[in-house]
Length: 408
Ligand code: URA
Image (cartoon, rainbow, N blue to C red; front, top):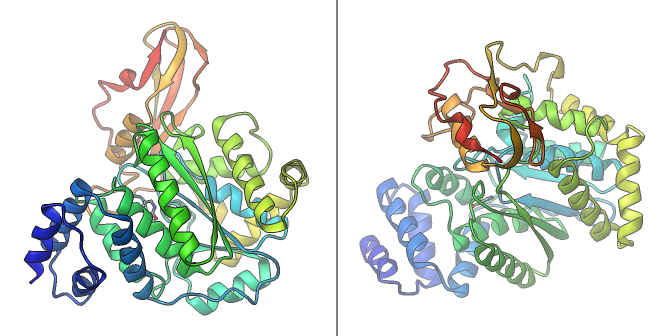
C-alpha cells in the first residue's frame, strides 16, 4: 500500500528498491497523487536516506527514460552541473568557453528551484530561443557546432523532471539524497564520460552547511563509480550572489559581458574560469596551468563569445530582442562605510517577489525584472550613493531593502 511506504519512511526505515520503484513509477502513472508524493518527499527530507536508497532512487530515475550514447562525439565528453544559487549563470559562460576549446558540450539544464534561478529560464529570456529540442536535434547540433543547451528532453530522466517541479513548491528541495539522485540520474542518462559538479553552499544555496555539501560530494562520487564515470566536485560559496545581476534577461546580458572579456575580476568570473579549467583538464588530460591559459585565451580571442552566438543562433534565439523592464528604481545606501556582506538569500527572495522566479509550478516568469548590484563585497560607499537598480513591472515593498547589505 502506498501509505505504508510513506509511513515506513516517516519512521526512518529503509525503503527497498522495489518500494521506491513502485511509489515513484506509480506517481508517473498517476496512481500516486501529488499529495502522497509530497508527503513521501517531506519524509525523505526529514529522515534522510541510506546510501543504498539513494543508489536505488537514482536507478529508478535513470530507468524512467533513455540513456544517451555520446560515443560518436570526438574526445572525452565532460558534463557540468551546478546545484544552483542566486545569480548563478555559470553554464551560460562555461559551456561556450569549453566548447570553443573543442570540448563538446551537450547540456540539459533545468528551471529555477526554490529561490535559485535556472539556466533554462535564463535562456528563455532570449526571444525565440528553443529549449525543447528533440533528442535528434540535440545530437545533430552538438555534432555540428559542438554545443547545445536545452531543457531535459522528454525521454531523459523524465521522472526527475516531474519530481523536481513538485519539490520546488513543497519545501523539499534541500535534501542531500534527493539532490544527489536528481543530479546524477540526469548526468548518467546524459551519457557524458566525465562529470563535474559545482556544489554551492551558503544562505543562497540549497545546502546551508559545509557538512551537507561534503555529504553530497561524497554521494555523487560514489554514484559515479557505480556507473563507471569519473565525477569531480567543487564546493563554492553562495552566501553572496554570483556576479552583479539577478533576474533572467539581466543575467544573460551579464554572461555576455563576461564572454566578451568586459568583466574580469569578480566572484562569478573567477568561479567560471576555475570550472572551465577543470572541465578542460578532465577532457584533455592536461596540466591545470595549460588549461587555464587555454580558457583565458578563448575569452581574449573572442572564440568563447563567438561560440555563444553560434549556440543562440542555432537554437533560434534573437539577442537583439532581449530586454529588461523599462521601469527601474535606483536604491541608495542609507549609510557610509564598507560593504561587508550582501545576502544572497534575501536577493533571491526579492527576485521571486519581482517575478523573476516561481512560487507555484504554474507561475509564469517575468524575464525582464531583477536586481542589478552596483557594488560588491569590499566596495566603499557613501550615504546616498546608488548601490542597486531594481527592474520591475510591479514594485514590491522595498522597506527592508537595506537589510540585504551589511555596511560597516
Ligand atoms: N539541481 C538538480 O538538478 N537537482 C536538484 O535537486 C538540485 C539541483
